[in-house]
Length: 595
Image 1 (cartoon, helix red, strand yellow):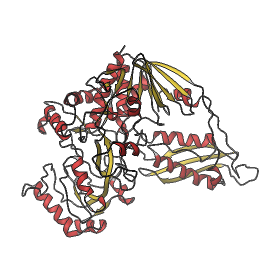
Image 2 (cartoon, helix red, strand yellow):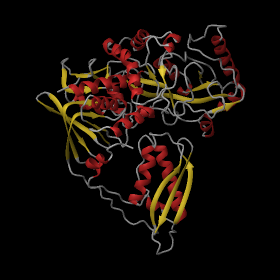
Image 3 (cartoon, helix red, strand yellow):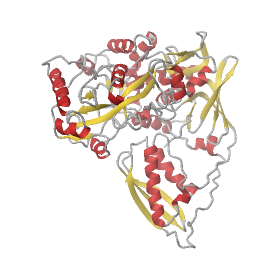
């Protein structure tokens, strides 16, 4: 798990004390609780999950997850911590792990079944009182303090450490990863002059043009240039750290061109396996979880540290000898902030779901604003037409690339160029019935149905859960998803003619690969969802934060979605991971050198 995870104890659990009233019927004297080993299997996020519970002397002696198919890294903390806390507290009054809620709940459900079988009063176990005593206040020093342990934060931390700096990373959530770990992993980068670039007729210049123009020329050209010119170097840097990518490139939703690189590991886990491996093997780099930054320390006009709160409410003072890097992500889960700055969409209130992890609440923007940082482009909030109907998350998205699928509305008709910008597709979707659409594709991407999507879910699993649908023919599929069969058939036929060059696409689409003509056929329902906030803290090409007077805020850097001014009014799909990588590295390098 996290290297120096014991450091969390210093700031959050130093004086941890569990106060638990004895649950009813948990002693062997009454004979109602039976010692023994119990197992239970339930549905996890990616398949079945099995736990083993050992009861001894009327108490819960151990809880282990013995089998599961959950996504590595994403679910690790749930797999390790939820069972440990059940034993520690002798209760079922255990918090789920943010970002791994389904896995956490599956563990709790399975353990509950085991304890029922053993004779425990499980309802009483759910109400056991658990309190934590406040730990002592602590002061910690490092050359560089990084706020946020997502993709940008850890890119900055690792880079700063490679430059010889001691680094402390603080993260308010109970695990590393942020939005990056939940992403599909697509990273736009052009290896100028490579066979892949030649085959795709791609170049750094085209990447610049599409990024700048795709954001309505609202981004800072110097920042855009920095992004596209350093993206491939970032990929090579990750590879030097041991991260692996699949060969070739693909077009991610709203990416406009096949220049996205796909990691070998599922979703965004490869980034954090790579960073964690580095942290585990190197000194002078620590990660403190459950530690929330509350304010920046300013002395003589320079940012020199951070005041944070530990898990138990204790104060953690972090002194930065060189500089502070803010990498806390965007504000996609902060409804109040979305509503405050939104000018582009009709409503971004609490009824509008988000793909973001729970911690994406704009904390870093608030921190920087308090030291007079300039904010730019805050109104540019990206909606994505690909959210899960129940949660708004990216989970359940069956597309693997842009070229091989179409969108149809509830009448079975296409309504937009499916290779267009994200804002164009989302605006069109909002005009459809119930603002819902079906993603439709065939067996080119899923020959057996056992293949996984970009979010580590098998198609057959999604079908079994009722989140995706299958038809041997288009008519069968139309019946399954309750759309007009004639309309669906016509939509596919028109698309296929465009693919084969027999007719122009009626929506002007130009990104094609294979026709949709190979059964069985598949579909999944999707909705508009808040995905990315393009606005944030103003930075220059050196990742230095700029204040409202146009001056550099000494000692303060920022990277990732907390910043603004790069993507303009619309972000190309695949550019976020390039952004956090490029500017995270720049921030880390310059923070390490800032004396």
